[in-house]
Length: 318
Image (cartoon, rainbow, N blue to C red):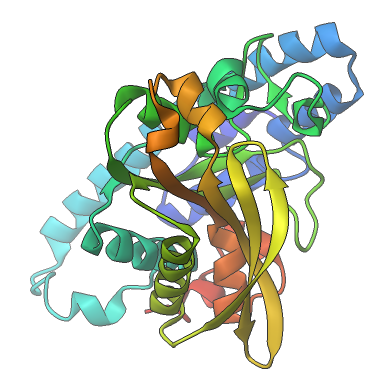
C-alpha cells in the first residue's frame, strides 16, 4: 500500500476519514508490521518496534499536514460562499464521540472533588511502567506477548499507572490527589471485547484515607458517570501497587458487571517513590477502562465500533 500517495490525494474531510481508516485497517502498513512483531524473535522485536514507532509518526505527520490543508480550503470556501451566521444553532448539530462523553463525566467529577489532571505520555520507560510500581521482573505483564517494547527499556505504555509513579515521585512526602486519562497499548488480538489500544483513567489520592473513603469515591464517581445511584460490590484481588486490592462490580440494568480495579496504595510503592515514612501516608488508587464504561452505559456490544468513525453511530450522541 502506497500510503504517501493515498494521503496526498485526499481532497475533503470524508476522504480523509476513509483514507485514515484504510491505512490503519488490517490491510494497512501498521497492522502488517504489528503482525511481523508478533512472529519475530526478541532481537527482531526491538528493531521492528522502532520501525513501528517511526512509521506511526510519519503517517500521523503526513495526515496532519493534509488535514490542515483541507481545513484551510474549507474555511476559504465558507468565506466565499456562505453568508449565513456560522455560529447559529451549532450546539444542535454537534455529535460527540461516546468516549469523549464518558471521559468528560469522569473529568468533571474528579475536578469538582479536589483532584488535578495530569497529561500522559504514550511511550514509557520500563522503570516507571513496571519497577516503580512494585512489579517484579518475573510478573506475567512483563511477557513480550503482552507488552509492545520499542527498545530494551522503552515501551508503549500498558497502563496509565506509570504516570502515578511519576506523580508520587514528584510529590514525595506530600498529600495530593490527581487523575489522568490516556491511551494504553497491549499486544492483543482485536475482537468484540479486546483491542490493542484503549483508553484508561487512573486516579490517586494521598491523604488520611481508608477503605471506606475508597468505596465512597468509587460509588460516587460511577454514579455520576452513569447518572444514577449505583449499587456496588467488591471482591478481593491482587495488584502489585495496591494492598489490599479489590475488583469492583456495579448492578446495572438487572445484572452485576465488573468495571474496575482499585485499592489502598502499597507502602512499598511509596517507599520506591521516595516517601521517607510511607507508613504515615494512606492513599487510594484505581484504574478504569473508558471503553468498558462506555460500552456498558450506551449498550455498545463491539469495542471496534469506537474506532470506525461511522457517522451513523456518532449521530446518536449529542
